[in-house]
Structure formats: structure tokens, C-alpha cells
Image 1 (spheres, rainbow, N blue to C red):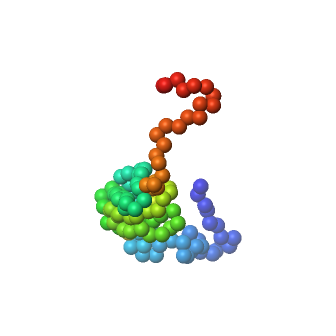
Image 2 (image 1 turned 120 degrees about the vertical axis):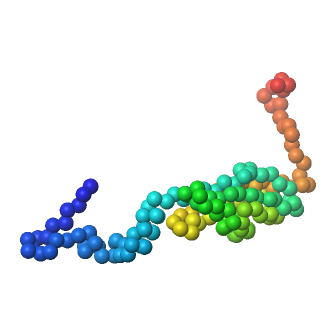
Length: 150
């Protein structure tokens, strides 16, 4: 859609978008370049190397991820920030080792592109088992008939 700015007074100077909205447009060449860079940028790509991890209580879990800027040319892995489901920061960088309590934990690795300001995120689910709880390999109540062995 093209907007036409018309003045009710034929003798009035022509209006431009920047004269009507003076703070809406970049004033300097550097500001224009930053705006174009942001408009043409994609968010960073974060890849966690283990989408699902099973651990044991008392044993630290190692989490690893990589990150690149949206232009795919800049490695941002060293700037990764790791957080848990409560928003608590667990560490920074490509790999962290954390002790987690019993239960399921959603861990997020995020990074901000220093040029565009865009944020990329990736995640993993960590299930920490109770070492004192027996593992059930097979369970059937046989309520609906005999097990057929398949």
C-alpha cells in the first residue's frame, strides 16, 4: 500500500514521511545501515547436541550446544547462556556440566546476535532418575487376558 500525504493547503510545502514522523526514520547513514542489517537478519541458530538426556541423581549431566549467527558466518557458541525451566542460569559456553535433582528438567541454550540483537534458542529435556528406585522393564496387569508373548 502506498500512502499519499496531501496538504489541505495547496501552497504548503510538500510533506514527506520523515517530516510527518520525524523520529520514525534513521537520521544518519550508520543508523540506516543498522536498520537494513536488522531487517535482513535472521535469528541465530542454536543446536543442542542431545535433544533428550537421561541421568542419575548425584551424577552431573553434560550439556553441549553450538550456535551460529543468522548469516551462518559467525560462530556464537562461546556466548551461549544455559538456563533451566525456572530461568536460573546454569552456565555459559558450548558445554556445561550440572548436577540436577530427580525429575524432568527443560534446559534452554540461548544466544543474542551482537549485530542484529536477535535471539536464538535451543533446548533439551533431561530426565534424572532416582538411583534407589527400581527400573520397570516390563509391566502388565493381565486384566484383559493373557499376555501373548509378542
